[in-house]
Image (cartoon, helix red, strand yellow):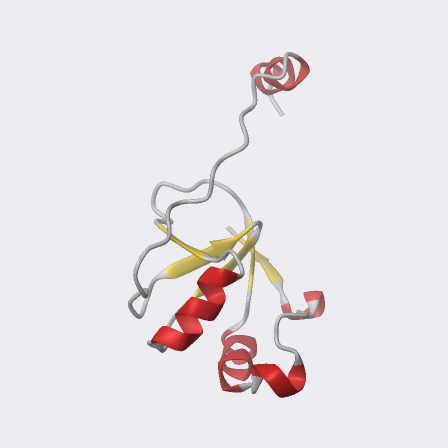
Length: 103
């Protein structure tokens, strides 16, 4: 943390970032984020699945301009989530042990 960061924090200059506006369904290869968690979509998702993700605060982001650090959801966990019956298994509870650090 630099002196500039410390001063900005002390004087309350930091501004909480607003989530990007809701976008249409992301393409394969897109990154979606929520808070400090990132999912790299290697496969297309259905409109219903994207509505569920968007309804829970997930947004598409451009990683080329984003310097924040995220926890990544492994592909196996994403496939398991997409195949789950959300009504039966309560999808959305999340298991933090499935995440790993990425940048």
